Amino acid sequence: MSDARILVTGAGGFIGHHLVTSLKRRGYWVRGVDLHPPDYTAVDADEFELRDLRRFDECLLATRGIDHVYALAADMGGMGFISANHATILHNNALINIHTLEAARMNGVSRYLFSSSACVYPDFLQNDANVTPLKEQDAYPANPQDAYGWEKLFAERVCLAYAEEHGLETRIVRFHNIYGPYGTYDGGREKVPAALCRKVAAVEPGGEIEIWGDGEQTRSFCYVDDCVEGIYRLMQSDYREPLNLGSEDMVTVNELAHLVITQSGKHGVTLKHVDGPQGVRGRNSDNRRLREVLEWEPVVTLDQGLEPTYQWIEKQVAQ
Ligand code: NAD
Ligand code: GDD
Image (cartoon, rainbow, N blue to C red; front, top):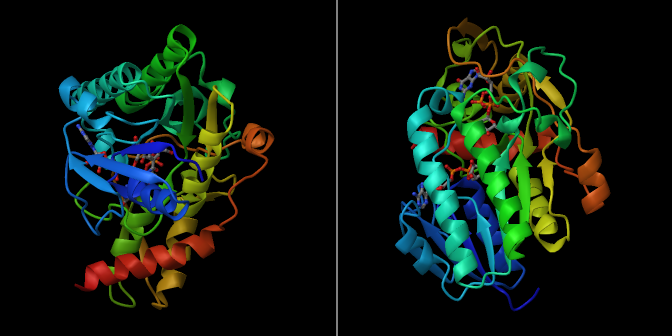
């Protein structure tokens, strides 16, 4: 615990909500800012302000009197959203990031954590389901698949430049598909763990659920409690370069679906493979640098994390 005053942007969203809860437990004073009120549950912040961080004047107000910023605000979603909204994502997220960072500098913020993504890694390293886990240095030469990844890479560069030119202590974390309760589970922005929990929760035993593609594409999934712990540890560290934060346990989407079906206790649910946006064929995190830098790594298994996630989504679907 320290007496630093904290700003969490995107505090009404999935990771932001969990991060605020954890920072409050650690005894910090926290301001949360978001474009929208929280979707599912109140945010436990000392102040919660509705602001559009694409606007520089709003960023100046958001960062007033703040020591540390956790910059999580972004126009984001799973493959259904990021494959179909390239211009919107570039426009909104570039404005959010350059304005929040400059306002933080002007207001004398001392530490700034930027939430980047595994989507920065080049397409050509992720064409095989049996992918080699991605190391931080693999991001260059750059060729992210979507505009979302290009903007994240640009914003990483902005952070590195502010550290070099202005001495702002910036931290950069690359999340690998984070899941858990209070995450978007419907409406088109949901990622695959939440989407499959929703589909299984809604189907009768013996029914079928739709899976985009052949289901043999691979990912690793990181539970949100581990994500929040890793974010905090990185912010406390003196490490300025980008760092992966994800699980190293890769599964196919079909395997994920079967884990969710087991969680539900429903018998005889089958998979129907349909066309849909698939993103990269395979993705996994290489956590060697994470272990070196933080002397820690995620501990929650996919089975353990899916239990509270499925239970929460099942309850939402039943309402
Ligand atoms: P989320 O969509 O639940 O939260 C993002 C929040 O940002 C939302 O509440 C949204 O309203 C807010 N926001 C959007 N535009 C804004 C604006 N103009 N002004 C103020 N707030 C605005 O997403 P999340 O999963 O919590 O992701 C948090 C961060 O982590 C994002 O930067 C995201 O790109 C990054 N990330 C997440 C994942 C993941 O798997 N969840 C993976 C890689 C990177
Ligand atoms: N969303 C979703 N919904 N994906 C599905 C579904 C479904 O019903 N069925 C199968 N999939 C497949 C997708 O086709 C894709 O191949 C895989 O599941 C993973 O999809 P997502 O979870 O939507 O996205 P992602 O892993 O490709 O990318 C996500 O993680 C990145 C970080 O690792 C996105 O959330 C990015 O925004 C994020 O940066």
